Length: 83
Image 1 (cartoon, one colour):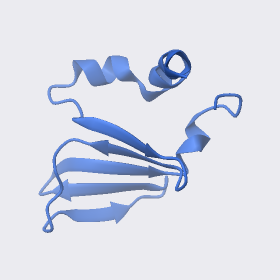
Image 2 (cartoon, rainbow, N blue to C red; image 1 turned 90 degrees about the vertical axis):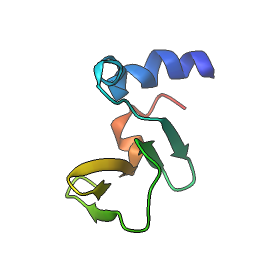
Image 3 (tube, one colour; image 1 turned 90 degrees about the horizontal axis):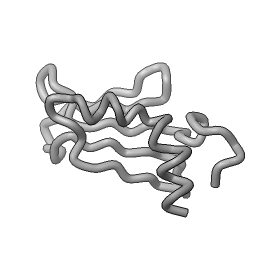
């Protein structure tokens, strides 16, 4: 299972780009039941503002800085033959 994740999912997430980021995400989590991928850059605060964009991505910002994202219907990003 872990090897399949490394070979099939990680390249699609663009981790080469993530590795080169000045401040990469602290963690990722996937909610299988809700089919949502969470990408966390910083702990959320009550004062953070969140908005849903037209690509079904909820982006939370603090000022002009993105602090976390939730990608809804995340399985659409991956081919159907990967479980």
